[in-house]
Image 1 (tube, rainbow, N blue to C red):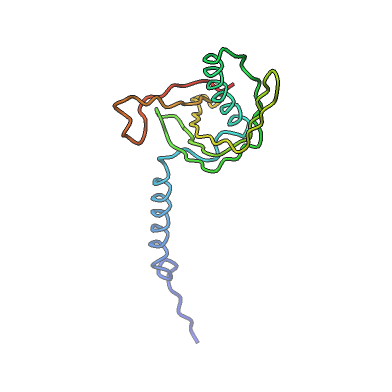
Image 2 (cartoon, rainbow, N blue to C red; image 1 turned 45 degrees about the vertical axis):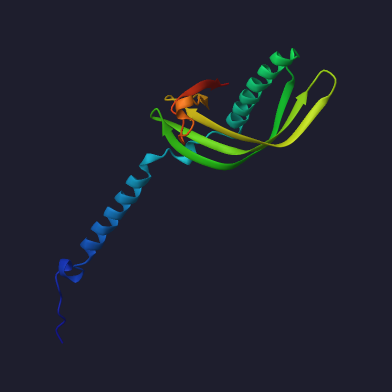
Length: 158
């Protein structure tokens, strides 16, 4: 009996089509996710803690000035990020984080503990990737009804 052999390219005529469709789908899926920075570059717990400290210190400094009182020492503990959103602001990767933390305020006469304080912060990774900035929205009267503020105050996170 003679066995019929076909040419290798004729055995699987759909193989090329399937490969091209697979490549096209991969390109399409990766191009769709190109509008957001990678979550793997998101800030660490230490950066988040430092940014929350900066935010709380800023509000405590203003409050202490109004009350003409000493600025308390503070400790941030038990940070839990509940929501993380990545976006680009000014062409730099930015992360919008929401969650809660525990706070201890060391006053001259006593220590106050506050549990489950909420935070809502924006952290932006700088171009060189070595430093972070806390972005504080500056909402102008003309922007109050818009969803995303257009003006930001920025502070370096140490």
